[in-house]
Amino acid sequence: MAPGEKEKPVAAVHKAGCFCGAVEIEVTGKPAFAGYCHCRDCQAWSAAPINAFSLWPSSSVRITKGEADIGTFHKTENSYRKYCKVCGGHVMTEHPRMRLIDVYANLLQGFAHQPTLHANYGSKMVSVKDGLPKFKDLPAELGGSGETLPD
Ligand SMILES: [Zn+2]
Ligand SMILES: [Zn+2]
Image 1 (cartoon, helix red, strand yellow):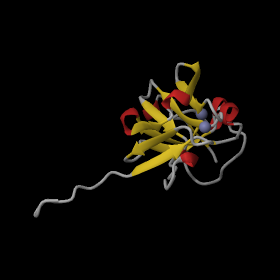
Image 2: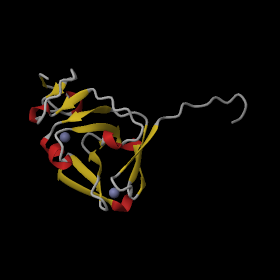
Image 3: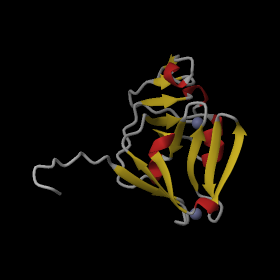
Image 4: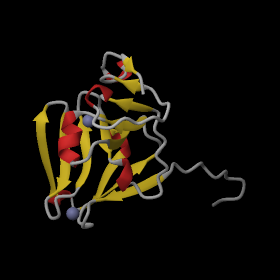
């Protein structure tokens, strides 16, 4: 670095990968939204009652390894679910209408998941009494009704 040159703040980079490691991705910066999804599609896809999501602008997500091993399945136009064809591990879900990509928060290395809301609580399988807002579907900013439910 030249003398007098100021160091630019470096945006945080977090890596994520599939179950076997064939697929790797990187996200840069901060997610636009982070929380938990209780929708029936996430429940069925993840085989779990709740999906911890972090939504990133598409431009912040980069595939760094194994692009050819990524399979995509979409049941609706809202969600293109991406998984590793080698191990079946889930990696991320593209939401073209929102122009955001959900990178599963559990997979992001060194990432502190800071949830601010629960989405699709109307179809919850378990209650979470954490005091965060519980949206029946989605917040209005994400195209939902914005209606909230009790914990
Ligand atoms: Zn894999
Ligand atoms: Zn969901």
